[in-house]
Picture 1 (cartoon, one colour):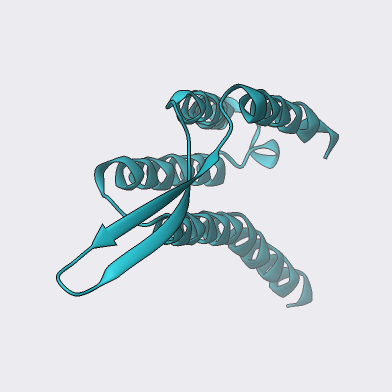
Picture 2 (cartoon, one colour; picture 1 turned 60 degrees about the vertical axis):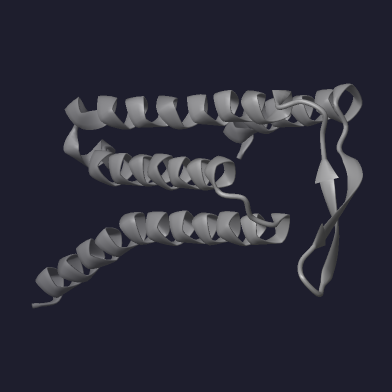
Length: 149
């Protein structure tokens, strides 16, 4: 857990900087259709700087993770989980890229975008856990079967 502190600290610093430099502000959006009016209140900002900084920082972390997962190929077998790491990191990169494209190419409500991001996080978390846990459980089961029989 201590190894993650620097990454969380950098994220906190980024958030604090943009809280004062380019804070979110409330914006009223009114949309009129033939017989209905929709009133929404959304969080808005003046520049794309926060988005760009987040994409560079988090994209860099995913890129470094992919590179490190690839570099584990030559490690001793008992110390490496390179196939699982590579699959997990590429899964994170793919889902993140898809969500990034959706966020910028499709005009959706913020609540819909939050739902899409939540579904992406759920998918990445669940599939990553399955990629790491299921092979280990199968390995333990086969060891017990070989030891018992």
